[in-house]
Length: 408
Image 1 (tube, helix red, strand yellow):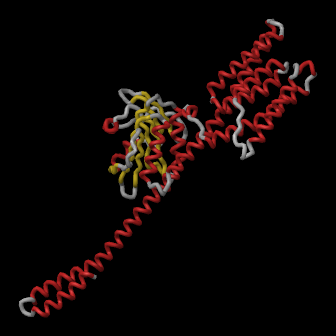
Image 2 (spheres, rainbow, N blue to C red):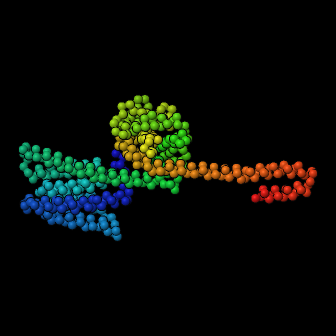
Image 3 (cartoon, helix red, strand yellow):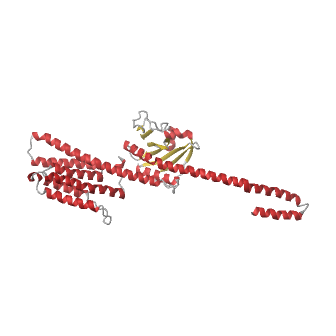
């Protein structure tokens, strides 16, 4: 999925490393308890000493995580892998080995993601089978136990790796959503905020263009913000009539859709965002709109403001094939940005009404003050024009008074 390729930033990376540092001593204690409960012959040479050393190192690293003056001090994963390999040779207890192995799988899932960690689980399972084969007799009766051992080892390791990768993905997603929310700042203004958010989405989803269409029911218009990759110019919305709303909402506001190919019969998928059911008749961009945008692929999710579908966020011309995980991720992003966007649009409405109110006030003042004075000046000029031939001195006095009125 998309989050597999996203890397955590410094704050999230420290959080993940702290989780690994706290998990390490827990698993080491479990391995040590298992060894101490077994007879010495079943522990393996120096196995208890080795796990004790690992536990001491793990406790030191966990304590260091809380010392601000030392900072982050993670143990590289290859060292944990090396310790796992040595422990495999030292111990005779599969259960004790599993505890150390499960920690390594968890750490690998957090640092590497699912795919590489599953490969690691397969390699460790194969190594455990080889050691078991060398230590025990090769008999057909042992095949069932071997199958159970390999299946359990691989499934447990892959499961722990999956949990670690999910934790990593959740941390990355939350950090990314917080990053996007931070871009929607009132001080930046709507145009700059939307330019930053759309630009981040274009980069994250590897597409050529992002589009946000919002219907303003107060003035019965649709505003469309479009941003192409690499465009740093000021983002100015298009002002369109509401008859275009069906084109942007695809005549199905509750549809989350993806079209990897829009030509001909097309290649796409989608579902109802309310219940997650797949759509048999998938809505698509109208032909004129598709030609206007010049898109060959599209990813689209409905935007809700105040609980009502009022627009859609769409990403066009992906540089790679969109997956269902991408559409789910975009749904989460739009759902998360709904409230900040609503606040931004609400502030825009408040400012627009404030500006309109100020204009009305100035208009009234002009009409009741300056405009009335200008009309009075015009009337007095007409009177003085008639007095000039009859009484020039009185006309000059009137002009002086009128001049002062104009200056005022």
